[in-house]
Length: 84
Image: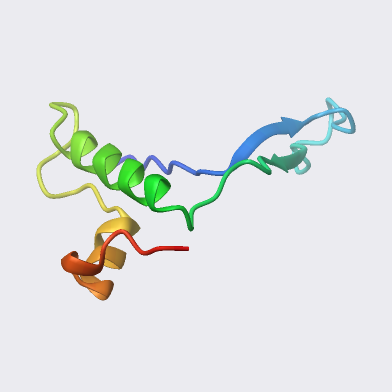
């Protein structure tokens, strides 16, 4: 079954040093300095994103795995989102 991984906090990939005949080096990830996963708004957004993803008809039922679900369960629903 195909796997899709979604990463947060990346801005772009700097490909300025990529050589067309070197398939092992694909560039350097540039991080987004404005991204803050510790912010409660970011945690809420990610949780809603994952919940929405699970409802899509192209997702096989019960196969989507989001770490934010485990994090919410770990801290307890009453304590989620966690303050900075």
